[in-house]
Image 1 (cartoon, helix red, strand yellow):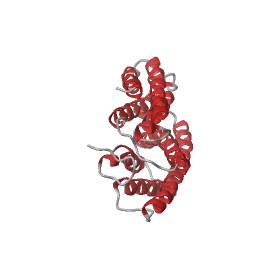
Image 2 (image 1 turned 180 degrees about the vertical axis):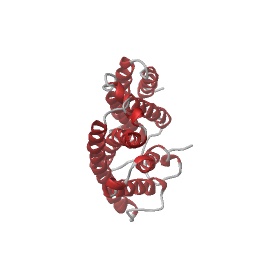
Image 3 (image 1 turned 60 degrees about the horizontal axis):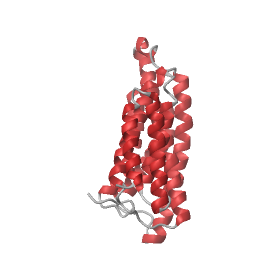
Length: 250
């Protein structure tokens, strides 16, 4: 077992305890980041999906740890921790994979953009879901809305993080298409990873265009579907024979 695998495994265990123990989130996040660094030193930066998963999981856990003193945002904190756990489990599966070779500059641009995108969208979508539910409660069940986080606070979190995530997704998608054009001769193919990213990006684009018309469960469902497509591209598509270098054996 490599040092990166040991650190990742310890990080998952600490994060699991972090659902009720704030220090667990901090130590789990640091172990995730240490595992990502160890794997990068052994194989090179962003040489496989495990490094990105560990980096994302560590940053999400750190963000979740800062929400412990804000009880009204506890659903968002739990969501971030569970997502970090999922990313850690995925990294444990992906770590033995040696990864594919890409030009270093484009790898850093493409992978770095999606690190920012997944991180920002994880927070923005979580806040947006809470925002949509709070909006519905204010209209239909005000007594439930009193116990939830203020709408203006959720809206500010949602808008800020979604904008950053959308811009980063656009940069990641564009750089990936540029690389595919030069490497495969076509910027897009009927590939599960590429198609799911493109569909997720299109749904986010439509979300910003129709934001004022989307309310309640419709708003929640739209956001969750867009993020699910992007998350599938990262966690699911590598197992489906994608032409992307992050593909993994079953």
